[in-house]
Length: 394
Image 1 (cartoon, rainbow, N blue to C red):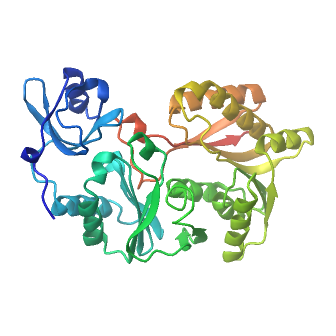
Image 2: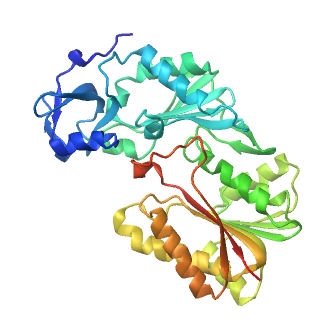
């Protein structure tokens, strides 16, 4: 495989504002801050400022608003050895994870922008999310094979972001074999992931540590409620401690998979209910029902900045009702995966809901994504998942 060197491609020049973004640690430079792009072909390119000062090498996507994604500030060859070393380094930072499925590379969070690598036992599911990275596909796949020695590599290149990069949506086997269904074990709980067709790369790996936290804080022998349960990943952890669990989702198919996961664990104390979570919590409030442990883990309500106000109203409504039906001393875990709803906005919403509930709501802990989904402090886009653990005082 041929090494990519800075001299192999025409240089892209950026404005002072673009250069300052890299200086401040943010890896993206937008179209508006690109001064010269002489060859509009995606790839790995050297980048300089207007005066010709070398700034680094980046993934270049000529059709994207995010034109440049910083790979390295050096001028070394970006070759198979480069990718192998960085993938192996990311994997080594995950030593000690007590689960059979975890994220090996979290894109910008691991200094490898637009690259996702998830490990499901001996199999790898990867995503190449930029046009620049696509040009290095052969080296990236070879680097995955060399660093991780998987039995198979599946490319889940069906994320919506690829459309903005001018890339096709595809799911294809790149190496070996990857099964349709994989059994995952985390903290002694088993569930089935679907690498070829499931959400994200087959499962919500980013909530792993939050699921364990919820299990540890479930009130023993109590009644638990899991809203937006999907395949029941939170419900399974709740069920190990609660007397009974009500798991709610609008998808019949998702609930069927959840019930299958319960059978896999020999768990029989989860009731699966198809329904609208907003309608149900209002119904529970009218009937004065109470739950000792509640999980609110909805899908992203805010896909764009323009939808933040409506999203916050939705988050407040469901959390307000959850607070009202929380038993004295009960525990509520609530989360948001909407990037556009910041942690400050989410916290302020919860405070408003607590005031309107008339309850004394105690803060226990704030969480984010699991540790294999690292956030960069100077790249707010990496901090999309917010979680808060609360308790209702008697």
